Image (cartoon, rainbow, N blue to C red; front, side, top):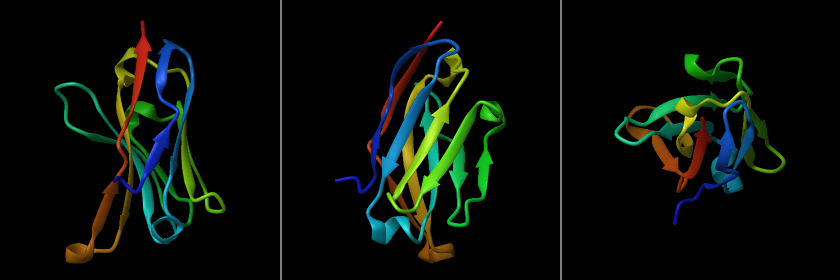
Length: 119
C-alpha cells in the first residue's frame, strides 16, 4: 500500500483550476522533501514542483506562474494549486516523498490521481 495518499484530481475545462492534496505519515513527512510529478500517456514521468522542509519550492518551467505548491506541517500534507490549466497539463499526477542522500536515499510514491483538461 502506497504511504502517500492523493486526492483532488478530475476533469476541468481549459482555464479552470484544480487543487491536489497529498497526505503522508508524520514519520515520513517530517523528514522528506515532497514533490508532485506527472506522467502523460507515452511520456516520461516529469517533476512538476517540489518543496523542502524549510519551504523552498521549485517548479517546472511549464507550470511557473500557474501552479503553486504548499506544505502544511501540522496536517502532514502538501497541496498543488493548479490555475489556468491547459490541455497539455493532462496527466496522472503523483505525490512523491524523498529523504536521505546517495545510497541512503529513499523514495516513496502515491497511487496517482488523474487530471484531465478539456479543450
